[in-house]
Image (cartoon, rainbow, N blue to C red; front, side):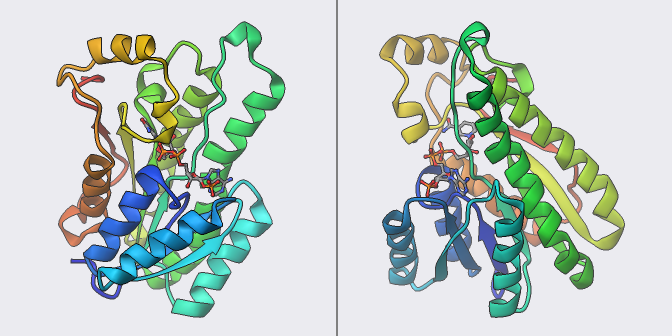
Length: 246
Ligand SMILES: NC(=O)c1ccc[n+]([C@@H]2O[C@H](COP(=O)([O-])OP(=O)(O)OC[C@H]3O[C@@H](n4cnc5c(N)ncnc54)[C@H](OP(=O)(O)O)[C@@H]3O)[C@@H](O)[C@H]2O)c1
């Protein structure tokens, strides 16, 4: 159980983040449902959690903005007194073949997926060091492990997250803080619903378990990594991908 834990989940207005927020709340955590533009959807997530008897609050923050990320963490500490769990889930794609990829699309993906996670970790670290405890969970991707044609920017950001994960894990282990990454394969969310049937069939061919994952598959792994049961696990990349990256 995660009773009395305070959790921040970035990009929790839909998809994987929403399910992680709901799962952590169901286990007793108070969850900060972060979003950037989708206020109404974030409020819906909060209502769902409250209807199930859980505690949550929606807080807007563009995680790619260093100062705004600082304000987000300061607000949570002021309001709740501590931060036990940070899930860096906010992410975007701007897919294109290398020769067609614009500088803008490269920067946008790196700024949200990689710098966004750095910003949040950077600003949560002081509080977790003070507490001498904390769980940081970064949502990477199979694309960061294997690479993926058409996703040079996205793969770079997700591989970068693995580097951040291992470095933070080493740096903060002696202070009771763990940092792990989850590398989802293809999960059924708005992010993957835009793929053509042809692309989806090609992807299914590469998945030994022969189906896309669900948001629940990722949320359950995040809840485990946030729990006391995972206290001796740090610096790891857990693939939840139907066997794609074995
Ligand atoms: N779906 C997959 O197959 C898959 C596979 C591997 C990894 N992942 C990773 O899992 C994470 C979630 O993916 P998903 O499929 O659930 O995506 P999604 O449905 O597109 O949701 C993305 C979430 O991120 C938020 N977000 C985007 N930019 C943000 C910013 N600058 N600041 C704060 N929040 C921001 C969005 O909120 P707003 O709408 O409010 O902007 C939204 O809540 C991402 O990191 C993604 O790369 C997904």
